[in-house]
Image 1 (cartoon, rainbow, N blue to C red):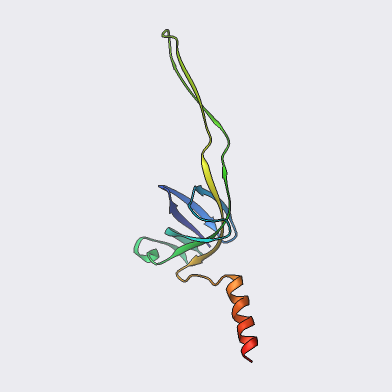
Image 2 (tube, one colour):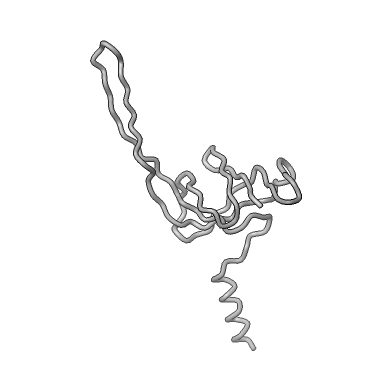
Length: 121
């Protein structure tokens, strides 16, 4: 199963377990973020529009960084006008943990719930 989700005016294709570079997010490393889904595809077929209105992509923030440098060179012939700039786009690397309507439980919460249950017994 894979989903196409929207973030920062761009769309990304991802499956569970994929690492995806998205526009920089204001989230801490290790936190969970969710993105709205535009389209999903699995063995049953393709779903889009109102069929996936409640579906979300849940991902864990892995790291923040800057992409490879690109050179922006502006030049006007015969005018001695030249302008050279470099740019590095900031990004956030996320790992897709689940695709669905319900938020998955994190391993820390399940371990804590198991420990609380064991202590109660």
